[in-house]
Length: 146
Image (cartoon, rainbow, N blue to C red; front, side):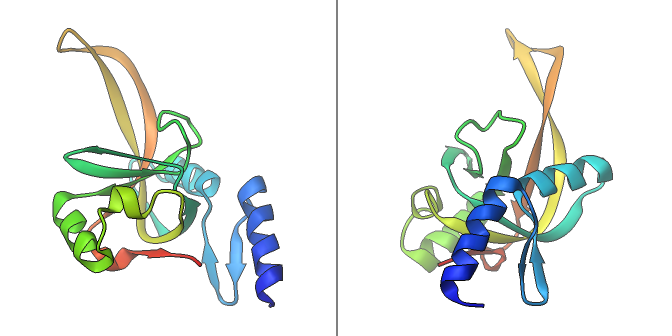
């Protein structure tokens, strides 16, 4: 495949949620990851996940989000522990929450549906929603797609 064709195919895939194929390897888009993780819950689903990092956040851990609003039901979040953050900082020379922002990435790992609970005055309420997370255990699990 030519580079131009692959680029156009990637845009179509990101817009439609159709699985990306590059030779013998398949990549899951955020909609596919979310659907597969929901069906597998409470277990996780393994694969290589393909996404654009639209926003990042940090609260002890670093969060790379596929959507502008991390609460969006279409969002997939890559979760980076402080240990892996340090390895990525050394590898790329920049904090991952800065380095990956706006980049197209592929992550190999396990996508899992997690429950996010709401609290009021420090007390857990009966309200919640689901997010799909991919936890990084090693810096080698993530790569930037040129």
